Length: 566
Image (cartoon, rainbow, N blue to C red; front, side, top):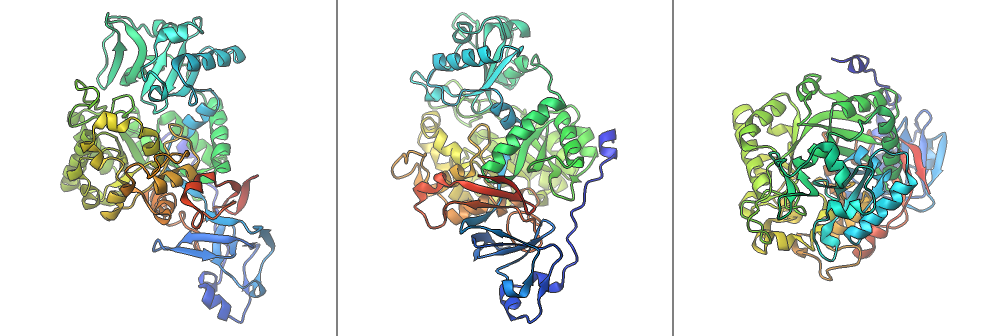
């Protein structure tokens, strides 16, 4: 065990001594003649509160009593309760802090600190943004950015190094596609990486080349690592900047907890350090990256859970395939719009058994990235074989994205108790190209949220930020309407797979907590759990569904402490 872990002594947020009556129902409290006494208790009043109970049923409340960061009771009789402080909710709607079950925390922070190409309308427009950023940040040795998406450009064609060379030729440029599965670079970057006409594509990746065999400047999946290895090495100082930027952004959007989908040893150590020092701004359920050379060391360290629940490490993120937009998602049959392509398997079938056995055998939850129907199929097969050989189905293993599934495989998630961890805004972002990629027949098992939920499996929801925007109300809106924020398509995109607002809310709260083995302390505002809550400007359970995305967060509290206010 390294020196950082050997000094792992987290702060303890113990609940103060409470009477048994503390955990009584509102009806019991009303009948009590004695006064409920809690040391330094705080009453949040004048709210229209919603939470799920432990059965997953939606309940309402008008006030909440908390002490030492945890919920004591709901709907208390103020006249029979001794409190030291009150918080006036000013009639706002109160919800549990929302949980994003799949995001990339430092990736979001980096995205907030680099050139953002999400709104670019063409390769030339994106290059112009890069030029403006490079001019304003002359001290940077590399220009990095993220967010381009050729499917939103009029020509729908991949960009080229020449597009960037026209504006920045003296510094290397690397721009990650919005889905994180492709990189666009200039000639300078390729020169520094030694990329030539003779460079072969690595396993699980592709160097896009022109008709003459010259690299165009776009690198798919594992091929992007040929460029990434030449980027300036990250440091704790950079991580802190990214952490602070991301934490501030998430809290302002009502997210108090997130599942970080793939952290290497350096970030693992950084998170442990920040947890020891009490400096993590949001709660992190971290998935160790399966590709990290020190995976075995991190597994041997065992589970790490901060007693304040700001850091929990007990899972591994593995990588099955690429993304649909860059045609890297592995399909059982060829792409409808590219008959010579089947996508890419990032973990080769012959390596899966050892990976699954190692991770699950160590008692860690395995969370497997699978977007295409082939990647989902081979992952389900491997989970089934592993469970028969060594067990481990109780670990709540997951398939991250579970985006395109062969219809015959849909019921297998519930049968195997493998959680489909899904991101609603992926559907509304992909609707313009998914049918082109897949054809109508394969859409029967694509983005199939309701079918999976109805099969009897929990459905944790997230955003995959910074691939998508982090705002969870965008995800709630997409889940319920199957529309983008321009109300398109009018009747919803494959609307039969839409969720109810209660189901979507559960996906961003209790189901997300369950998927992270944290439903004992998070996911609902019920007695004994952390008082993580938000105050918002509208009632998402009564408004027109098309307006859910417009919800604004006015205040965010973590463990009863205000961490954001508008």
